[in-house]
Length: 344
Image 1 (spheres, rainbow, N blue to C red):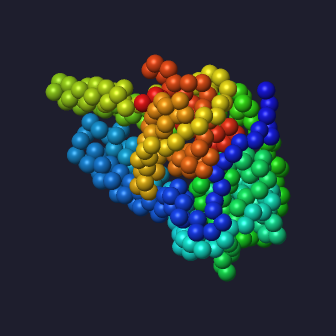
Image 2 (image 1 turned 30 degrees about the vertical axis):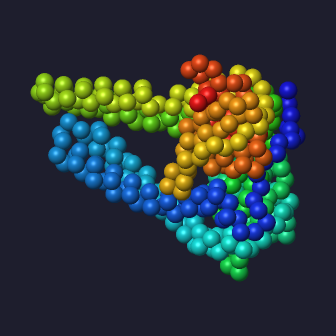
Image 3 (image 1 turned 90 degrees about the vertical axis):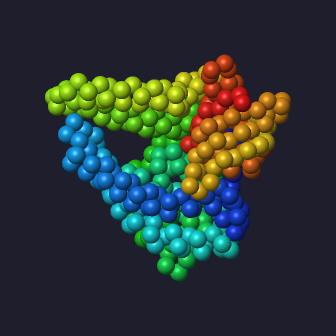
């Protein structure tokens, strides 16, 4: 069943003073936090790489992985600095009093996660807009714009997404081929944007598991070549402890989100938020909800966008119902907002 024009009530920013919205304030602070985390991650990775490579001859693989992570953090920090260092102060000023305006929007050019959007009388370059966000822009055909300021910086809000998007006024670019609009469906298995985010989350977890597997295998081989039953025994003990911890903390429902989506159709449930544990330092955190029938739902990994939509609409979209030792997919049909919930 294809419902490309399926109507779903979603969050939209306030007309002005948008930072008074808790979700917007948290996500705006996340830009600065990401840069600090990149610096901290680089320093910590270099320290551990130096220790592993310099003093532990049976941990060269681990040291190499830390060195690679340091390089990754440096690249991420440089990109964050280039894309957002001048925009962020401008955005803080714009979101504290400047009124937002609704404009017709159309993506005219894109390259990777960068895009130029024709917005009313101007063109805005968005340095970080993934496929899911581009799909919402293309389908809705409108965005909210705060600004621009005299230097051309602006803030863009996509319906349903409380993340302030960096934008800069640019000249009209050479157009690129338009992306096909993804299918939206009440059937979870056929709703393409939530399935895309489910696949993205799965890849993140698989990468983490892959890196750990490489590290543990490297430690075992190097301990054997280095010699010494004591060293080998210690390494094997570390492997068992790590695997045991992974078994306890691995978010199995997050890995199975596509399966949970395929369990049925999206259904709207009236809910109220009982407790939200997220803040700027930990934007993705626990959320406790009360269903209309009096049952409590627990979401361990809830993004601020999900909480913002629930607060704005009083509605939670869910595929199926949680069961014994099994979660249910929750999010918004047609939007890149998805996680899993269980009965508390």
